[in-house]
Image (cartoon, rainbow, N blue to C red; front, side):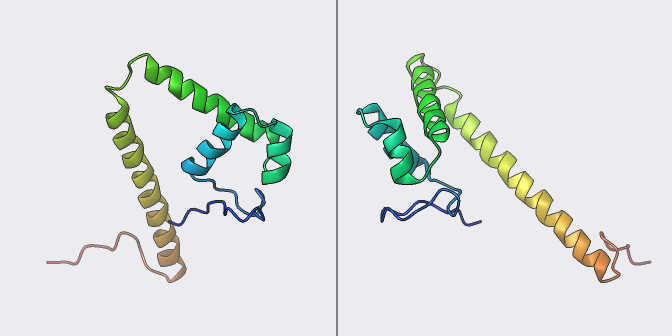
Length: 115
């Protein structure tokens, strides 16, 4: 699965590049927190202001939770999210293969052979 990220050449438009890496989002949020104006960042990057504001809010909330000392579940939560994502991908892949098989007149799963 390929994720699209934003290039640093300044020509990226959010609508043509819908996926931003966490690193790029963090860079944008840090620029905002350092004092750059939200509207200017929005125009410069081609990203809606409300989306940048949401990134900032999520960033600050995660920092707040981290300061509360909730590190114990972080690794476990990350592994669970990764497993759920993988299950979703495999489920979707299975559904696609079943549709392909149906179009070819095959039954999925195949019938067991008589012994």
